[in-house]
Amino acid sequence: ALSLVEQQKVEVDLYSVTQEVTRLYANIVEMDTRLELLQLLRQNVEDRITKVRAGVEAGTVLASNLLILQAEVLGIAQRIDEARSTRTGLIAVMNVYTGDSLAPATAFRMPVPETALKDSITRPEMNLFNYQSTSYSAQRRLIDAGTRPQLKGVFQGGIGKPGLNIL
Image (cartoon, rainbow, N blue to C red; front, side, top):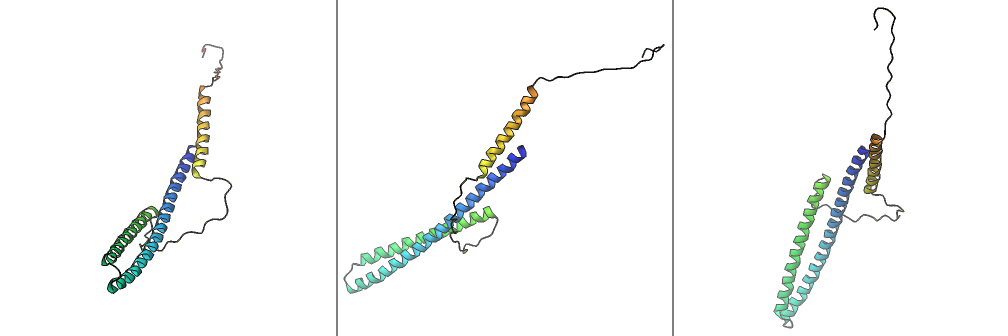
């Protein structure tokens, strides 16, 4: 019973590592999506810069509006760099957990969700609880057996020949 408990503890630890890798994978996919959105935002601001620059040259728009948009492009570029470095760090942590050597340029995609719903919950913690319960009941039976009264008997017998030697 104790060996089953120890095996299940290993399963629980493995399950927690699997959850952590899944969380890292989801964060990497989120960073990819954030990078795509930031690229689109930068492209949109650059298009606006082109239009504002034409307005500044025509004299219909203030030059400060152009400077504001250029500062916004710099801020977006910083956020893109942050997202890239965060993604690289997440991949490095995933490499540590999995033992693989994934390159920072590796493409990640969202997995297809399972359509079938499960009727029961199957987690290793539940099996661990069941094994611990079995182990505790076995230990309880062992303790109870040690405290019960015991009946012991001794039988001694012997054989002898009549004569000078009594033994």
